[in-house]
Image 1 (cartoon, helix red, strand yellow):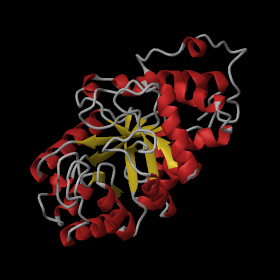
Image 2 (tube, helix red, strand yellow):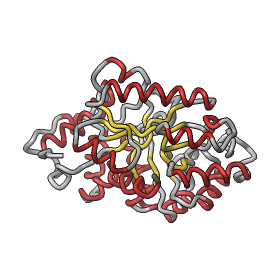
Image 3 (cartoon, helix red, strand yellow):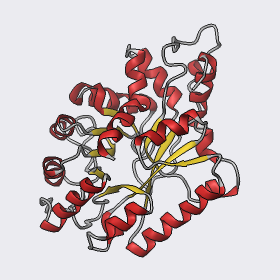
Length: 323
């Protein structure tokens, strides 16, 4: 992308459309902006779990997603059956065909770079629970052929093939669940363990041949929430080459969001951490500002190369291995 520093900051500023920026940020002038010259022209912004309203893009233009200045976003679709999942994918396929100059369907990591270079918004389609396969591993092939590239193996209620964060049994994967993970690995789909319990997350990390991910997570060491991940899990997924998308929580400030990002970096390493705007498909649409986070990371003395990784390059590298 041929952006100069001011254009880059303008794009990042759009990344929290409607969000109120801190006064110190909104008052920045070109003469006193922090140093982002090393980022200009090559930064990729990937939201690892966005929850846009499905109707947002249906009225021409890119709607609020474009207004957030993103390069690409992982959209976690909620679906309670295979038939409903096929219908949701078909709806998005019609949208791609109506808006070819504005949207790119992400089927491989190269599509993310293509969307950025062409000024279009990349959409990586996934599902927020495994109910979309109707307990039939073969249905994964049809979903993959229709464009799905990620599946969250559990939501907050127990969903086969895995046990979720609210499930007291917190058992390991069943034989069926192992088969699901193996088939996802074979096809090239992200194994998303975001809302799996502690034991099931650990086992999923262990058996997945390709690196799994927490597309939206927070750190239990800072907030003892049932959906948060322990330091043990953060280290384990990083050791397998996986990724952690840190979300802002339901009521966190930007500084608290930054605290979780910083903690995840300290535990898992800067190469395995990214940013998610939503904590779940049922959450209110996030008002995360990637500009605010980028400036906050700069104030915390992160190098510009590392900020670039956190904004999206880490996910781009990860998806080259996972897809």
